[in-house]
Image (tube, rainbow, N blue to C red):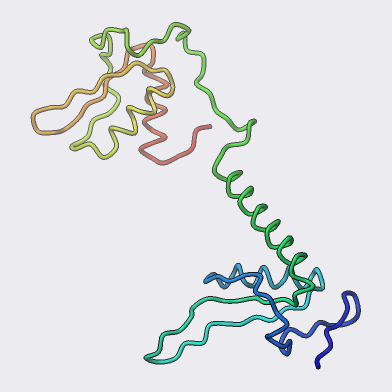
Length: 187
């Protein structure tokens, strides 16, 4: 019968653990994630065995990596893996949402009474964008609206589009169009 080392007592063998004594604690296709979990288990001095995919020509094969730990280490290993997964999800959410300090709001442009549904589109007389088609126009329209800038879009007979803004918003509207056209972030 094989003897597993106690935590904190020398190197941990990960290759010769008897399979019957193991409980699968993780399985997946991502080799990077597998390596990360193995590192976590090593750091926590939890013995484990890794089963890697073994492709065989013309046979169905399991492409998943599998990590097994001795049953008496299972709860601790699962806790470590769950915590790592939660931390990764939190990091992903943090990358997707701007930090509170990074939230950009529309500048105060004398639009305290801005009402996109109640204004005269004929007041928008300054052309800030035109294109053949509609690839970018929708983004410009949405960005102008997000920044409380009145705009109207004329669609010509040939399918081209022109975006107009009210004269007071011309400078800011041109900045926004420039940012979108050149894919540069606002400053």
